[in-house]
Image (tube, rainbow, N blue to C red):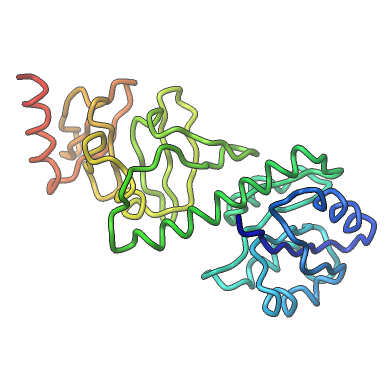
Length: 250
């Protein structure tokens, strides 16, 4: 397996040393750069091109969020925030961080964060590779942001998927779900078309979860779902959905 290049940014030299020591036993990562000056980080990132960036948040001059905002959107490293504060977690996942670690970092949790960064990097590569072509096999799970954590959601738990800008919200059978940084169209080509059906420009449903259609007071169509929820149905998709329901009734 190709070892990943990691860079560490923290204004506390002691914290940097501890993190480097904790990373050392992992056979997946090489630390290629370390700095305690946020002002130096951008030039080092451009020169070293790390795969993973371990980044403190509260730093003088530039914060961790300031640094992320200045990174190029394409081919940026996977971001793992490492901080003493839990109050920034929601914002961290809002900028598509691969993980969020609390100091002091323990080895098992650090190894898990590296695995999540690998998953994030692989997901970006998959999305790029499938922008024009369908994958050979449908995906089986997705990493999603939920509150202050990142969780793996199995595709067979998903009832329907809702577009929210550059993200999709996964609505699951247990009602918990999660948010994934991916467009609906990019995700659609990775799903099994025998299991999921596009019902709206902003919605994909599990075929077996659809129990009926109804027209709302506004005139818009909605699909009833097994959980009691509903998803919007677009006019251009309604014909295929009606055909599906007729087949289920037959």
